[in-house]
Image (cartoon, rainbow, N blue to C red):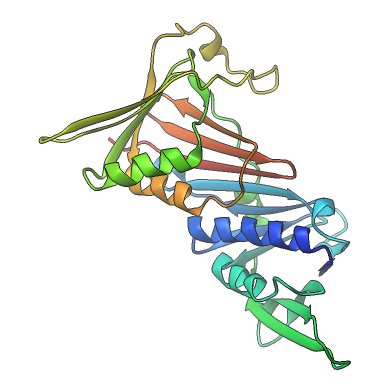
Length: 283
């Protein structure tokens, strides 16, 4: 079982750092799944029992100049590690001006992801900073928990408004309530609502547009749906705020799929990165 990778391009390093920073804001620990072509950050929260879920996919060729992987077995050429994203984020932040960054799986006092950054210097003496980030190797028998989640059979799919605008609205609403209702229809309209004994507040968004899901992801029930009718889900406002606060991916597309009264499925797409986040309904 071996893994080593190398980043030289500063733009790629900064982009990778932003992705890891985003993950670190969403969860304290997650699974880093390494395959020959992709890296995945996975949080397999049991949405049915109230936990959030996350799936972030990166194409390794768009980040790394060198990438070598030998998985646990010839018929299972991948490695699954439990990591603390904040530790990886902190190591990457100290490497922002590095001439190159190498990441490899090592065995110190425990399994580690060792990050070695070669920093620029004015003299002929090289400066190298090494970070050993402890990880746990996930045994193969548990891998089934960390496969890509299936697309939920949603009632409404809609493009999100600018995430900064949405964050400002949710930040204000959080001061008034612990819960938020998110509702949308197939006419490109979305509302964020809170209701308490003392106050009722609704923010309306319109002309957002609805994604044209093709045969591969198109659920039957949304196609025959009245475009005016809202699908809604009530969620813990802190979980939505956490997602909006941590966002550093700067997506080219941001979408939300609503499974009526069950799940909010948020999707951010940016060239070589996709991030999915699942927030369960609360009663």
